[in-house]
Length: 140
Image (cartoon, rainbow, N blue to C red; front, side, top):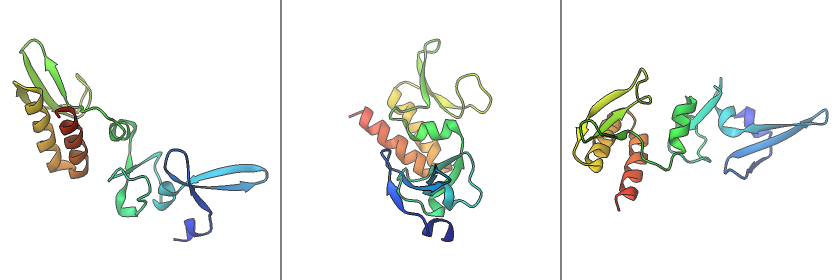
């Protein structure tokens, strides 16, 4: 790929492949994952969460909420519904915002988490795998 061949790459402190180029005394920094996409959006997501896997098929445009979830170390998508004394499972936006889809209410947190993982596998298997790992780590 011509855009990235001429640059000298290194791994930065955050684990991303970056290159620097000085022009007129000003250093410009390039992230490989942004250059690989032909028209990079503001944020780029690595589908498999591997910062050095910069194949075009592993990259996708994203927004802050999705990107934030990918860096999350906490299972999201369940909350305790005190009024009903059940765990609610959901996908999408925060409580009360458009785009939130309730998956059901469950007696245990684990069952609600499993409902989220099961539904997420239908939409985004990589994100589902990530949440499944978080679920298993939390419940062991």
